Length: 507
Ligand code: BG6
Image (tube, rainbow, N blue to C red; front, top):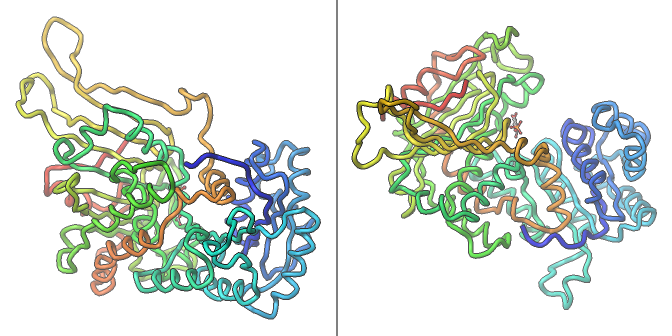
């Protein structure tokens, strides 16, 4: 959120470049920036992986994956000249001498100087050896920039680390230490693509650029908050990964994306829009997340796994029948959790988080349910009294909706809920940019606002670990417990019904 000043020349090195993320997200995002003229004048993108490709083969592979995205062939051809490929095993120090030579030649060719953005887009077990090798090969030249006389004159090397960032508090802390041995915190970009989504950023604008929301954004007026990320797809080809130690909805979605969204929704107004001021406020929320008690887990968390089902006429086979998945897997393809943020603002307000695969609808939203009026005047005039709501649709149908009670036209006094609707696409006549382009742009600028601080990650793991431990120790015998294409297990509805609440399940 800092002033977008000039972008410096730089080389973007993608480790693990033959993987899915590069072709699905990173290259389309960089191309998007390129066509919007938001790339530095001098840049190069170098993919590094073990598989052998020539530069041209690599470019073709990227192109073939999304030909429609690159239909402006003149722009693609010009952009593709910046893309290169180098076959190497980043976990083997012996491969680095050649790699460095190649980088040097490409830096000369593209005039990128020594600025480098290392992107770790690989399986998590390769993070540590790769970070250590980057250090041993002296590919971080900047040293401690705080010690230099003129920080602006020194080249930078930044690192972007994808999720999964650890699989529990211990492994996340360890990875943070490995990173800290090589990079300063200011150069470490722990990416969470949900923070790049327009509506998550818009949440800060909604809250802090307006006077009408903030006074009611607290425990005096809000009954509870729901944060949902439901997907219609199952695990598809990712069965082996998802069924492993970093998979499952609690780890894959709740611990990372949903807690991040919660922190932006719940934070106090920062003193400025500087990254450090915003992150300071987010960290306070992470520190205030109440760590559930192990014995209380059955009362506050629900796990689910999808069985056979149907969605829009399409048959979806059970999770356990997916390739790479243990036929007796206990993995949670659905997780719901009730949690509290112990601050003055949020004391006593439950936050209900849920995420699942193979559900009835793809939606990510935040719903604030307000308390009833202190005196209910219109008790008999509405068929069913509904709470006031603010619904922030993160995706799809990006927008913000406010639901309140209105009078039904006519002589008799009747009350019904009505909506004020801000629809992003209609309002701006534009599709929201992909989160990855926003985030890559920010890394090149050196703006850490939308990236996670080490404390946020470690606290987030602490907040979910008792649930994971309990689930690990106590197998559940009724799995699968929801049919694909539905809103999840009935136990999740019971969790809400216990306090007379219900999930916001849009049609
Ligand atoms: C990823 C998860 O981080 O987010 C995936 O690993 C999930 O399992 C994806 O499908 C969802 O992202 P989005 O942007 O489609 O909501």
